[in-house]
Image (tube, rainbow, N blue to C red; front, side):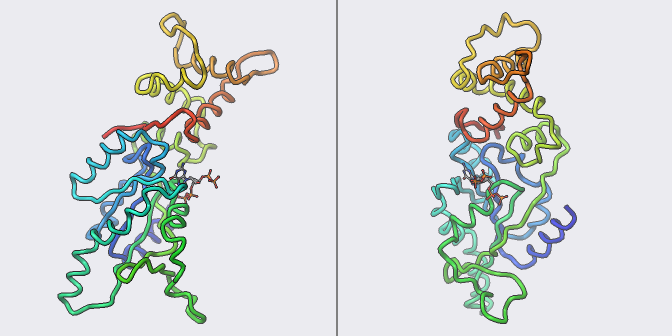
Length: 276
Ligand code: G4P
């Protein structure tokens, strides 16, 4: 983490524009809270990635939320490439001021430099490939010029650092940790999947009541279930998916994995875990 922070600080000194990638399913939880101080004075764009998996109506609300603070935004699906094309005009817009300031100082032909950054697993590599995959003209890519940073020229005004900045997830609030773990941004080994599954079931029951029903055909009257209804639902998922232990008992930890996997891959539908 200290190394990641040092790298970010080093790279930040080289760039004019930060393109911050976050997960459209939990945009605010997926942002590193130090980013505002790290990126002080830089132009900013927030890209809500994996928007194909998120609730589109909530994504629009998040974009409005950030744009209210003057930050440009885009919603993209980097895997399919949709929405990625809108980035170039957005970058030009974000850099207008910088290019104009350079021009007034007599600095011409100096491209604006940008970097992609985000927490692990948010899709940085996928995004860079989709966004700049064809722009292979790396400026430092000449014999004898192996040291230093590699920049990808996007157009005559803009260059992109070819390796993304890695931000680390940081949170004091347990709910934020829960969302990040469900998205897969915090390693599975350090989180208890049973706890994650119960949290997710409660959230879905509250916000997307049809999602579980549609996927697992729960067919249960939750009012009449003794004990914790979320645990009862997890048990039903175990039975429905054949997650059973040797004696025929429901294997809740296996069911929890199935549920989380179904969520991550979009099989439960388009779901966002937090609202502005
Ligand atoms: P990182 O560099 O930020 O760590 O993330 P990376 O690009 O490796 O992407 C992490 C996972 O997220 C990959 O899935 C990738 O395909 C997926 N992904 C990235 N962008 C999007 C998107 O916009 N929509 C969706 N649905 N998925 C996205 P994986 O299962 O780990 O790898 P793979 O099986 O796709 O190769």
